[in-house]
Image 1 (spheres, rainbow, N blue to C red):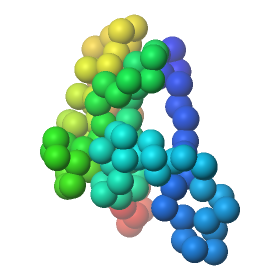
Image 2 (cartoon, rainbow, N blue to C red):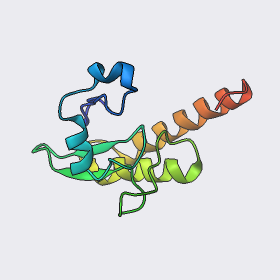
Image 3 (spheres, rainbow, N blue to C red):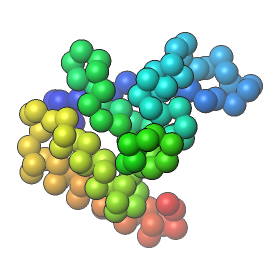
Length: 115
């Protein structure tokens, strides 16, 4: 993933006692990306000019459907569809490998009683 994507984290929607940790303008970005009602985590893939390619809302209206952490199969489908849509260097084989690694992580976590 590092060969193709740069990961940036924005702190938003902190509890009142931690508001100072929020990134200035973070909620403005969330609104621009149709994520202010989506819940967290919320993911966006941007192009090299900062224009949104796709976000983690699996419903276009942005009011519902945020996949959050892609745990369920349909959430994983959306997440890997996001990667597929935005990729230029990442191969299908690499995406399949990532999907298998996520499945193994989920299985390991569920076996321990997490999830």
